[in-house]
Amino acid sequence: MFKKILLATSGAPSTFGAARVAFDMAKRYGAEVVVFNVMGVPTKAFSQVVNDVRTGEEIEVDDEYRAWVEEELKSTFEKQIESVEYAKIVTTTGVPSREILRAARAEDADLIVMGASSGDSSAYRKGYPGSTLQRVAKAARCPVMTVHRETASYWGGFGNIVFATDFSKQAESAFKFALNSAKELGCDLTLFHALDISGKVLDQNAIEDKLIAARARIRETYGPLMGDFKDFDIEVWEGVPYVEVVKIARERSADLIVLAHHSRELDPELASLGSTLEQVILRAGCPVVSVSKPDKV
Image 1 (cartoon, rainbow, N blue to C red):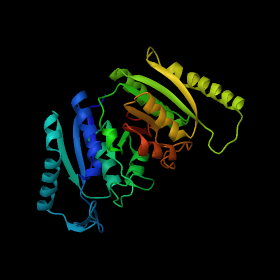
Image 2: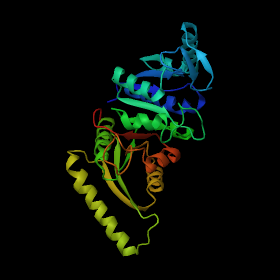
Image 3: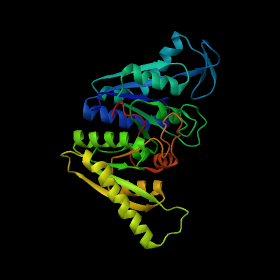
Image 4: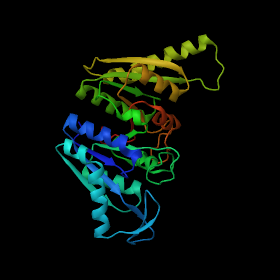
């Protein structure tokens, strides 16, 4: 299922968790890792002078500088690179999101793995709407895995996957990825919906009715697609969606959370990174995969 993983990294400590997961997956599932680094954003068209994505300093990119960056990446990820059968380093200059998407297409990657860091001014690492992660998640033809918290990078492979649905069109692609992963990797799968009651005043009977209706909708929507896969269950909880997604993932000791990359909007070109996904990425104790398009699921 995972033949080639594109690890988009600046080489900074905030990306080490994502690197740990990418290389661990490659070891477990025999995948190739492409360590991809955007050295800087050109200061003007066709210029060899770039703003370094980590420091913001202007640097002239020549063969010597490229060689230095590659050597730094080799040194940073030396042990991980030695631990897998196939790995290579690719560097370039340009707008990070555009180059990551271009590299994913050129390499025919099955998965993009990225880190996300809050409170960081870097255009490369800031994982929020308008950022590199936002643009990559919206346009990527393959699923995008994000590892934000350092604790989320320490796991023992896939055993339990939580798929959280808002019943949007994009959730269908996310479901296909979650189901295919569970089948091929021998995982348990939890189909989950959080009934959003934030800011609403409902009596308990009304809440119970909505929970029953949502559970029935999950069965009707996804049940016929399960085929002979039996290792799944259905859960519907009420509350603030991102809180409930993180809670059920913790309760189930989930190794992966899968969601559509946004909520409610049906046009992936117009949609922004959904606030639920954004908050789940910040708080989850495991990697989070967002799926925008059905191409590589």
